[in-house]
Length: 138
Image (tube, rainbow, N blue to C red; front, side, top):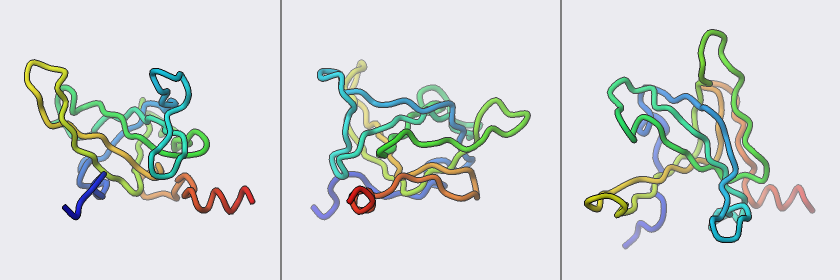
């Protein structure tokens, strides 16, 4: 099969009505209590808590986490006056389908990843690719 791993997807496909970030936290490996690392880049993973702006989104689909691989915690865009959340866009999004068998019946679920986060229509605040980070360190 030609497709392996996460499938690239446009931000607007995942969040056609936009998205709002609540916060960012490090993802910790449950067993080792160390930061969880991205398999491809080796960088630490960060979880951005996101609210889907789609008024039709319900239940588990309304609030999701988007994983971002970055050396340091991604910086969220500034707050917008009058809004309780921060509007965001994700760059380089990918979706990884998997089977969630923690309920009464197994179901297909999706893990969302991105290379960076930015303000909608604004300048990017993405993490440096692993190769660029290695060049900077040298």
